[in-house]
Length: 207
Image (cartoon, rainbow, N blue to C red; front, side):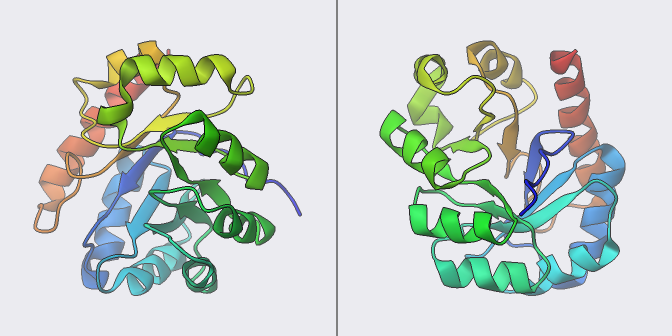
């Protein structure tokens, strides 16, 4: 089994409530702005259909998959739709292991060292720090001090272009971005502006 490659731009667009009819246009705008990881959470109707529509676009260098993936059935459904990214709010080793076995890129949610190491042992490729606000900058700094060197650490929850620098200083190596990027009803022009602001800020910080 080949190890899935890390997204070249480690910003995950969290597309909660994405309407399958809009999925293609939304994905194209985000890809053009520089996003290379698209997550459609499964706790809203139409998620699997939206994932399948985006996968068919075959966007270059882009991971597409599901969020709020809570069980092995979710993994199977996303994989069957062509998704190759697992994102979850929690750490369930059996779920991570199944996704990893299928060759998916796994970014489960963790909030403690115990969860972080359990996730890595199960095959996680990146750690989603969630909810980032409660873990805080100090929590991420402490977590990074004990994690294997090079472990991707992505805060999720309330991230904006204005808050990214402080997270990066604390040790963040990427982000999951939800409501400050996409909410149902956002226009494609608004989405483009928001996406470009996040990518521009990230590139400045990464440089």
